[in-house]
Image (cartoon, rainbow over all chains, first blue to last red; front, side, top):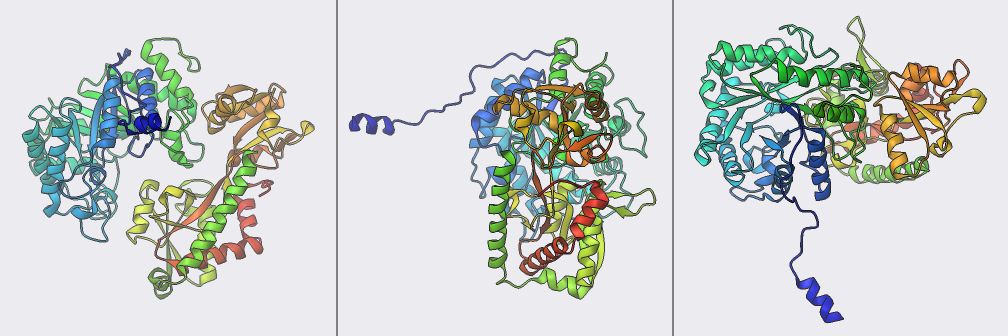
Length: 358
Length: 266
């Protein structure tokens, strides 16, 4: 008996959760997408369950965050284990992954700086990580997003946003990524929509930031543009304007691209959506959120031929935020679906809504 | 049941906080000294979360947290300066020294204790049941068993009841209305036994029109002040001030002003 137990224990451990064969995804709107938050999800079955529910909702696109610091803990030493799990399950569910890459390891930045701080001396190290990521995930992940919201001081290490410096970071990352895989699609960072006035210490208007990127020659260093566009308290179809933040503000971003000769490049909306928390002043009611979200997916499919995917923030958190941020999700940490989830699943299949009036 | 376990958990948390407080007394606190030298307490918040913090029509900050911060300033003899920043960036901004405290309806989060120190709780948020006064208050989720319960479609209460039914054996029928006022109307008409909603949303309905709020929250989440992890004196002084505010009735008055009517036992 003891020998049998010892023999059993000596066998290599087997994964209890396996990705399995690739599943087929059913949807009438191939631009539907969500931003998942699996970075800090520990249990593999929860990763699988999350991604299975994304597929069942009819969303073929997922944006996921791959923090540089997690996967390169020391220079040149890569630990892809968790990222492999996430990507393999996503692929098995028939999903296309858009990989956001930032979050600077301690070894790549000065002491007393934040995880978004990177000196120009560190750009090569970041580019090398992007190349390693592209190489490792070749055939599984084709899209990489270079940094996140660099027009915010918070996302730029609490320094003044610097479009020219970001362009240099983008250039180095682009060249390194293409050297690793010429077919990889490099996306410029999603910029935070903001009306920050000139000189604001916390951020720079994203339209100004993008124009300055183009002025610095960024146009040749990305294949597509990631974009963030939140509806806040306004319906999906509200007119855009330079003096307001709403869902269609992304049209102004696209116009800036067109004005700079980039009309052929696609836009991938990697953060968007509405919040239905009862306290937050920028939220809407849960019913309005369902209405606006369906309208937004429909708009992306019917009216925006330049938009490749519309990925909404955020499918599910691993734990409750216990703040207004919970009002962005579609599924609770315990996998209880919200009405918005079931309504979108019906929308994706062309079935009658349960709650939403036609 | 849930609240009972919650209270035990909070008691343990309180013990942990107390231990942390003692342990941190040994270090020097530049943050506290700079507040004294500067004569200004800098407070970070996202002013878009009434009744805790919001911008009034005249552009002035208002809310429970604003009053709480000013009360701290008065007790310490310093002015208060507010920094309005997106909630997602508050913890990193605190770590970067952009302000001294986060007072922004901040929920306690055990995962972040490497990055931020937490004060004792100064208020609890959570879900609450409203029922007809003739039926008496509903203070336990078990009391909803066998009943029709109203919620706002897609609200936190809606998800909570779904979870209770799926995982905890609650046998209730949930009726989801498009808005909370519609759910309250259904309660008044006798179409549902109770309505569950968040504590702050419940307040306007909990004492009027023959309705009554539960005497305890069905769920409870502690709201705390966030501090730098290397500020032991500041942490001690914040907790002392909160204790004093509890004793002299300041916290109750703040809740009465911003959550009226307050009738939840802690």
